[in-house]
Image (cartoon, rainbow over all chains, first blue to last red; front, top):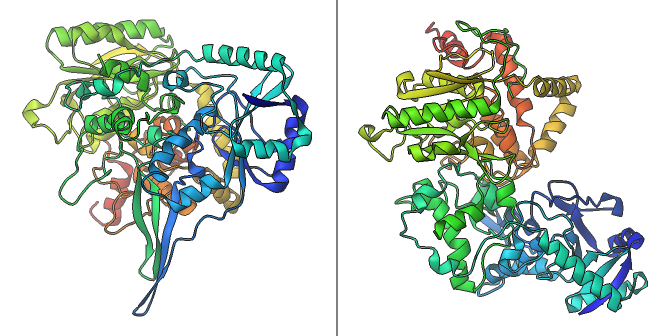
Length: 334
Length: 298
């Protein structure tokens, strides 16, 4: 493992240096990550931000093209890529970072989404290990960890006196070298402490779900679906806050004189989701919820070999009806 | 959360003594009634609350079997307006996915705000009084319905009322443009998840204007302008109907203080028309009354 050490009191100085060179995004309040203009704006709390990082790669409203109607003439303004300003996401939750390689399967796999790719390429991610996993967290059941490295370029782990800085990618190494004055070499003692800290943080994640053989256990035709979540109100909280849910709708917005074609977040919980001219394929609640579970834990696994969930627990913490997806999964497999 | 409505100390026709029941007593009473209804075949489903994933989280639950009765609970976290599950295209009393003959006999655990909501839904002809067995929890505030069984008495959350009222006063001290900016700031947080609408018993429309696209009244994506349109239209549709239960406020993941908006509307309706939603089953709803008199029908 390649690693450096960053003195605790130098983190904020580093942030201010980064702000000179990059657009820096960090947890800004209890609700969301956002661009910060100074290290004093970083909001570090026990709870993760309500919204995940996905909006910085897959925005909830994206213009695909614009159109103008002038008399008989229609003018199309094609998609312009998001600007390629280099961005650093700082103090990302490891679960939010881990969601990005999962989203890559859809937006940067068979199909290459230009906007998504541009944002991915121009963004470096420095995660911060979770010191206070919530009761709703279950990342360790899905291959993650409060100090997980998946999707990050660098990972900061708070040790007793310093931050341990794990170098995960080439881009991460380049950044550490560019700001070499802030870092010192790690040594065996720090490495030992880091391993202990991670083990301890993992212990704090107490919610579990058994995903071994889960995908095979989920049967579309099972009668259990009808009884699972009658309390669900079909809102979009779980899907919109989920760092991996990525279904979208395409809508035209504007008036006859001009407007835009927009890609926006959609949710399988909505009654209108994938509604077609002839019918609504999932007219009742249980069919919609079944879609959510099947997509995350079966279809995605079959298509991409990954589970469409990182165990961040936002869908549990914020569900207006108190639904716990881990309990649902445990019940559905019997 | 019953907002800023000033209410008489006693409800009409029933005196509620000052002693509030302990949550365990209410839980016990709900369980007793549920067991009796299911055992005597007087009801098919009891809609109540059960413990969820944490001590401070409950979940609406639907008990159809005597063996499940033990999971019903009542405590301070039971703020969901369960009347929501009665109506709409999949509602227990109005589902279009079954015939009238298949309609279940429903018993509903109802907090004071839920009781007022039931009144409103009956006034709006969503169902009849006799279609529902009401297991009521009262707090001395007026509710326009006599529960079939009163399963408990709770205290009004005065602290919360005062908090909302102080916050409203603060907003009212602002200039119009300051207040507009403040609400713009709140609505700009909206992610259009529609949790507010989905938990609301009065948002039972099968086709919400937010999703209508011929014509498209409100653009679907989340932008300050679109969000503002959605929230203002929803508020207008709930004037004089909202019972200020606070479910939308609590459901909002982005902490938009919808109670302030709806508390204000309820207070305005009371000020202008002397009407408090859900307190009198026989009353003509304020908006109906006004529209009828303006069109000369009254």
